[in-house]
Amino acid sequence: MTRTTAAPTELAARPRGGLRGALARRWPAVLGVVAAVNSLVLLARFPAPVQVWVSAWCVLLAAVIYLTWGTARGDLGNRRLLTAQTAAVLGFGAIALAAVAVDPATARSVLAAGWLAHAAWDVVHHRLGRVVPRWYAETCLVADLTLAATLLTVGLL
Image (cartoon, rainbow, N blue to C red; front, side):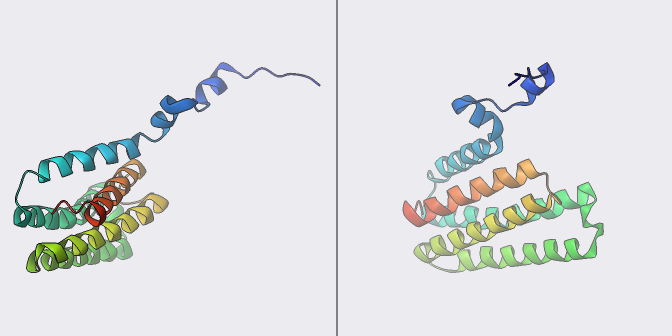
């Protein structure tokens, strides 16, 4: 049996082990958790109606960011992608309007559903590799899931 030695470039390309290596590979996920936690800490300072209002419009903003980024990247020249992004903005806008129209307890469920729906939207974009960069879709996915889980468990609102 012969033993081969890896070239220096192969060694550099190998994933690092341990926590540091995991963080280096999953930095978008770490960024998503940090962003969501920071958002929740800031939001917790406000009364429930303000929390609902801000959260509702952030759900809509998440969809608008995808539409804007896709336009800037030139991915929305494809009519199907443009139609899907426009429909998403309208759908997430409807979720935002519904959240501000109901009592805070119900709004919590509406917003959690909105963040879960946007997380699914993130998965689609991550797999397609279009409209937004993959790292952004991963960051957004983790942030959305963190926000939804918080709304469904801790409540915050």
